[in-house]
Image (tube, rainbow, N blue to C red):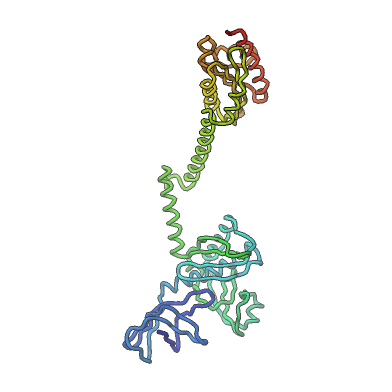
Length: 396
């Protein structure tokens, strides 16, 4: 059913703003308004008819809450347009928009994605305009006078000789026939939902205002609270920064565990680095010596590698070096079980070698260690090989 009234409060879909809904009540009939269109310059109200339509006086009512949400979003769209031109540059122009009760969608010309910092600045700029509680003034002017006075006209849009100007001083002046709040403070709050690409050189911002913006904040806060609970962080006591710190710590722990896993896998003899090290064993009579500089990141990892050498080569002495992130360097000496049965002790080897080189160290029969200067690692490994080879030369 389509109804045309002599006067109407209903806004017909145009300029990106959706149509009003509401009711028309006549004598013995009613129309539930679902849509409003412009037909041959007149406003046609579309909806479901109850009763028998009769000519006469009627009461036409728009859905007030819906209209209120639409006007918030439309005025916020003007502020958003002004924010983008102010912060990004005059190359920004509107390339399309949709204004409905739930959200606003604004397409604009720009060369690339906005950074998180730019999005935050745009959001802040719009909210500052809202919190200034500026009056939103409308007036009708000749098109030429409006444009020469600084009003922004949309590219490709057709205007009549007389246009409607919407001004939010000092931030925005645009030609617009849509509905708006009387004061920017009525928008309450503005939040960007997303910033995406539409096509080459065209970006799209989707945003919400008023109660929906508040609900968006609450949803994100609830999600953060759930994350905090899973991380054992009391968000209300410690603040959101504590969640970020906890995540950073977990990521660091994950990285350390991955490194340890990699070292353990190599230490288990399955990695090429360990295979190469074992293959480099040099025979000294019936025994052998394995010497190598490893990429172990910490002493426990170096000791794990040493245990692998002992297990794989029971008739060998292993000398492994590691330079750690803290700027420390260590040599680990290991002795296989067959050699230990002959009375060879890693602790005694380190004791003797340290006494010869002026170092310090010690340990047990199967494993011992000593510290070295990082820059002397290669020379110390070479000297340790000579020392051990000499000790094994006379062992039968």
